[in-house]
Image (cartoon, rainbow, N blue to C red; front, top):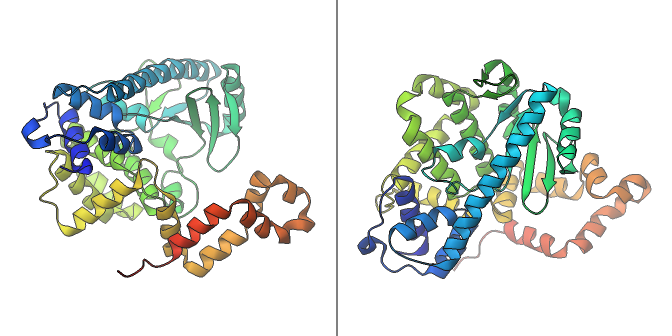
Length: 364
């Protein structure tokens, strides 16, 4: 097995609670495997399987301990945040990994780099006061559709005012989820906490994944999330409702391919039976890493807008980005014509990488 096959096989064993077969796994290169597992935020998950197979490695054990510790730390801090929201009468909805981690067999298997919570957008100012009272630093406020709060060394909370912003392909998703509050289900024993139905959570999960796919890409962890969620809930979800809503969202075909790939890849951890299209789709996941890559982002954006429009959009930034990233030029607007040159000099390496990503691949 190469490292990609090893990671997939070990991940499948972990979530299906199976002991890896050493005759199938062989002798993986643990250096390469660790690098790829960290790239996809799946090192803790992989460590569980390696331990079950009797393979001991201090580095994987450390990654597992870090993942478990981080999950416990986030759980403790999140309880404090939600208690404050309850006291203030602010409704909230935990999202993404906060929910998904509970569907994995053991703590630390579903790693997270942040916690995402949807809040009452009209109370965003009060949420800022709450977060700062709990020792968080405000990193971004009023930017796009979420506010960022961080508490060194590891905690990062994203408090969402909406689920999506009105950019491609988010404009369709933003409109679809605009009146989400009306569809939420109240948490038992809570006055202001809510959750999504299993069907709506799945729809949100697929929309979120598709948006990443459409831009910079998304990694194996997202595909594994789909498998874990469907493995647990597919038989009790209203598939007719899901299909109907997916068509409204314009991602029915994508979800079908994604679902089939997830079930095929992680049910046994064997990718030998994949079709050419499925193998290509899996390769995109593998090469994207957990949050996508710059190359994928550039190529997908250029494909969406067209090369000319893309280049034009990169040269002439919208004023809200000028204000956020280049406040000196925003304050001294007479100097704006020189901003592209300043950015080119300041970000030479990024600009070179961007040009390279836009160029067609060389024929060999």
